Image (cartoon, rainbow, N blue to C red):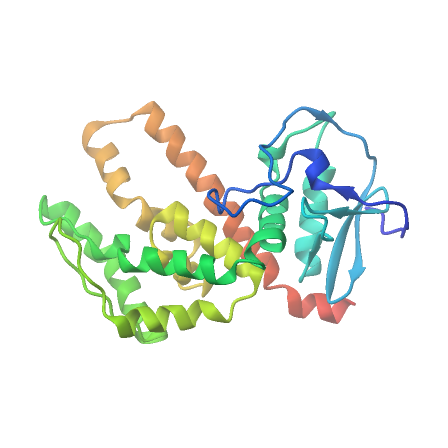
Length: 278
């Protein structure tokens, strides 16, 4: 990759059709919002990164990429910047936005989450108020036991690590979670930076569980355990009734999306080593 500095006008993701990510689908409109466009011919040869302020910018042929809202595409960790540059470097003759999850997450963090933090946090808390892990099956017994084995430890972790004790039910009627528990969960996300909030939002919306997302963020759950916990009911149904091609494809797509959000978080955790390398 090239790290050569060039003061020429930056590329923008708005021009490339990379203005939206998987997260925040119902977002506050801004000038950069457009549907993704596939098929744009690759117009650059080299990708690179360079220090920019407190972070690292991504470059194409030495020109800094800008977001749809025309902010610099700067991320906190060098490892993440290099991985985003690698996404661009792996593109073939035509640019395929569907293969650029890290780029879209970074863009979402910069253009949207940083400006609408409280709205994002409120949405995360709305998931906690009706968290997937709190609604159990009463029958069949095998499914109920699997839910307890998979979900019980996550609820225990949330109580121990975050101080949030949530109510569990096997009723179809919604339960009201304690205000204190929700306040504890809000405190757990209030201090996160925009990049981590964007990744957490992705995980929570994909899994339907704020607790699963937080457990991944804190590395209490790995990627595989998080996927299985979030899709336990779906996987059990496939076991009972046999393979469903459409459902299997949907789950594999979901697994891939979760994997990229987890990777994004892990790359952000490389901030310390990025500082040492600088």
